[in-house]
Length: 180
Length: 180
DNA sequence: AAGGTCATGTAAGCGGTTACATGATTGC
DNA sequence: GCAATCATGTAACCGCTTACATGACCTT
Image (cartoon, rainbow over all chains, first blue to last red; front, top):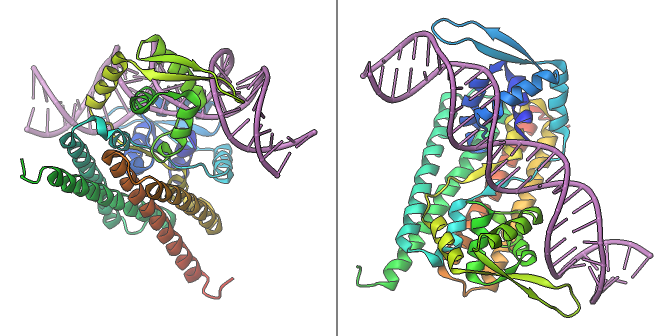
């Protein structure tokens, strides 16, 4: 799975510009995928020259023209190939957990800060996804399922980190019972 | 956070060879970090030429020599710099959730397969981590916390995916109540 | 006047993977 | 005899990010 595949998937739903694709990458796909403009525009160009998508310039009032891309038949086939390819393992890379792993070399207050900031971030993402579920109850059932799994995952993440923080604080007060 | 930082962290605990580092990357760090030999060996060489680590050849019986690397004072400082740098966002990239998002273009039995395989993978990882917690109760408390958060996260992931699968199956039997 | 949104693109470089190359030893 | 484990390394390539470059319009 790479940006090509995901862009093709998005264009399978409806024609989009690069800028609109970036918006979707941030939300609602941001929880499990992202790519920058530096990836999106060259990928669109490549996809077009390969004949998987076609470009159409759309003139707009009071804002710049945009290039709207549409899936071709070859593109639909290419996307189907991706959907038929073997599933790839999820990738999870966490600076927080790495630092936690090396926690012996840093103060507990620092650890608590890190945990707190990630908890906040997780809650922010959770709220976004929950709002979306409320705002758009008539999604395709697959996307609905995806959203639901995403919500469950991120809610669990917030909870796991909160429990981690509690454990850390319990330990801290145990090691200095006089309380600072 | 990159391979340099993590390798420096591991060597902060004890001297290691590239091969041993790879082993640790797979387990127990595999849940939230990984890197291949193609990264590890060049990184070690770079780290050595920068003076952050020092190499020592160790002759072994009945197996090849190995190069064991040890942190220098400069390396300890470099690692401290990393631990003092701002925390980076977690990265989660999921082929499964992408495919779920595009589920409208594929059969539900395929979705069920994918979910099942990821559930199995999550459970496999969960078991590994739980075994480690039992096998090594005397870890540094930070690593212990890291392990515990990891276990909570992956257990929640397995649960979220299982519930997703249930929802999918409920929907499937609802849309064909005669049952195939 | 400044900053945000809409909009598209390029260039340098980084960090990483995959595949290749080599080779001894151990267990089935 | 074959596969797995132990052990180190290189080369080609990929995918992506960051920073740069440009510019109109809209709101404060």
